[in-house]
Length: 116
Image (cartoon, rainbow, N blue to C red; front, side):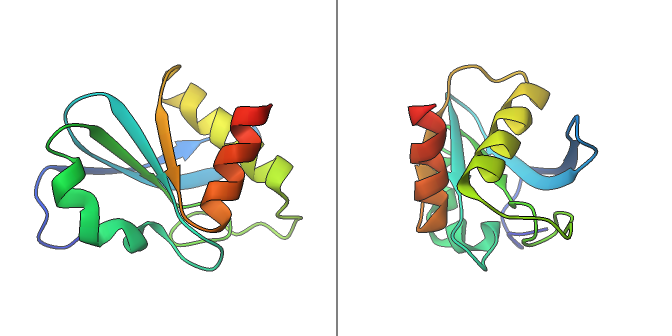
């Protein structure tokens, strides 16, 4: 569990069409909010604010490929590839309209995703 002590967390892996398994956690209730971490980190960076956000949103915390508990393929890790992973992750969860908050690389992936 990424957030020890925080109740009502669902932990799972999303198996993308390319075969990659991405780790994610879901908590809270309300409109979907996807939190994207920075390079070299994982979803644990969001721990300080999760309690406040889950009161009004369903929080989706994704570990990008090569980070945290997600698979670590020997491949390129470009914004385009991470953005594609994000799209496939959202499709896996059948989420079409979400709010994305990113930190560092996560913000760049979110912007790249939105621009496409």
